[in-house]
Image 1: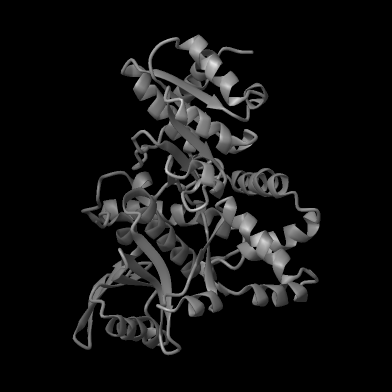
Image 2: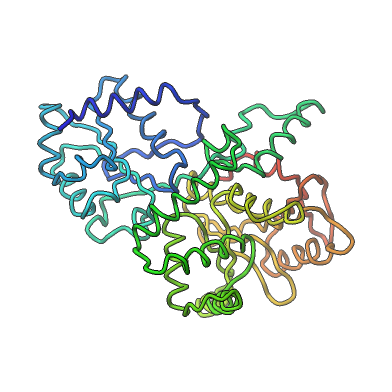
Length: 418
């Protein structure tokens, strides 16, 4: 078997050759198993390798081990521990175990490695089974997780903020490209439609078909691409079944639920529930659907769907806020039959902000977008009302409340909320 240090040095060498876009993410610390999760090719490996390099430079014992290596997958936990001790006979060793879901019975093996006390463990994977909400019971109390998403606009634009018309024009050009190409690092660097399709196909086959072993691949493909086209829209499983039946797909509700669960587990889609104090109403109400990156929306939407793209970008930025900085944030949408708001933001159970998204404010949508936001703010007792548009920036005063209308670029660059 190839030496574990040799594997580590080989991958660290590859890190030096790649173009680095600084991330605003720091990996968690502590004695628990630290899980870094998110969609494939989003930069999890880069973050692990960067952290591994920093620790090695400090003189610590470190190994990076990718479990897409067949020889590593064959090892039991005890055999792996023995190999590690051959490399580092003394001292605590920090392990970065990449694509851990490829290791059979990974939860049992991780528990053993954690409990022997010799190792500081980081793991990564492209499965939501590594999230705290879904972690197997064998790892309860031994684990914390962080969701990693594609590059944010803040990471791409850097720390400088536009002051002159030249800088603002340059930033708007950058935003146009970000709306189109999204934040997958290799897509952003290459601006390649083929890269977008490659990532989507890899998720389809490696993270879903192989993992969930769906028998009818053709049927799932029809559902897969139809669901992706729903970005920013409402759905129930029944409504999906009816729509798919119209396309010739005769799948029952349970099968459709399994398909969507698989897409969620690979972090390809996210569901946003209704805001309500009634659990029954939440369960019975439609959910909104968003994609992990707007590069995928560009495969389906043209210019007339720009509003749905920017709504997806706003959702992802709010999700980053929750994952990177404040896990107490809860996201939902509001609808009471009279008004609708795209995003309700709660912190510790208290509603702190309402965010509405529209491409532009027009006389025809003023009542829906502006007055609807105002009505919801009054009913929920919320003062912080934000309306995100593509370009407009102003303060609207209606009914004793102020609505902060801000352009998309400013929303995506705003300072993180506490």
